[in-house]
Length: 365
Image (tube, rainbow, N blue to C red; front, side):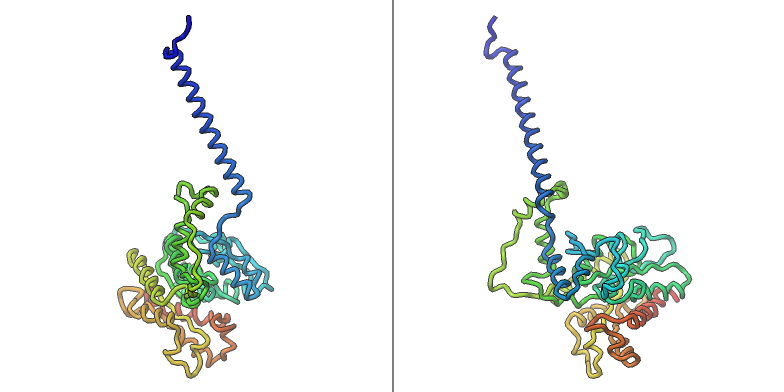
């Protein structure tokens, strides 16, 4: 008996044939995408931010090639300290313990959850906070921790999250993405040097927005193929010949970022302490308030209205410039500075002690 073209048997065979074709096409597509993913991973390196490349160039331009190896690209922060890093003693100014596994300048690991009874202070800053030119245990954060513990007779953890080259914007992103997880009782901010850097025609905020736009959605976050596709789809237009270089953070952006940090901490009832870092030129005997940079002025102005507790007797501002002038009188300018802003162990000792003194009333002592 001859089957009719429209018989049920013919229809069933046709459906099975189409299912097979669809399955074969799906498998072929998946295999092709998988092969493309493998080739992309093998042949095309991960995208790094322009800011990371610029910082590496800065370090190499300062003849600090070894220091360029102590940082790595970070999609949120531009760069961070490479984890578990140590450098030989002769690699000054960056030597010894660089970082623990969490990219903090700490010799030990710090649990994210704060142990009961421990006081935690998170220090955010640049190379001055990191401790350019000094050992990890001689930074002002470590001095502050040691002094407070000896006075309080209770555990204190001063977390050194300073990173060379960081701007206040990077500090704010670190706080939002990692810092708050450490459950700090207080956050200390010391910035204003790198923010004035004229690296290109865009600021740190604009670079961050570009990176976010070029990042694939979370479901594709681990795909190199998707990363490449999004990178090309959202690639920014090249700057015009008329584009002018500008600071990484303009003064108004700097103040805006301070406000954002303060608001995020206020929402969690975490006080903030603003440090005005003393630059070498601030300590000249003829220096006046007018010699301060606009970033130092912004830090001072913003901090004047803060307190580290509801009692205004503990100001949320510690201006270190008067301390610097005292130290010059005792040790001379060469005894407290390596260059225009990085200070010697003697100065770190004095700054760490001054911070501890400032915080004792906040701790009820």
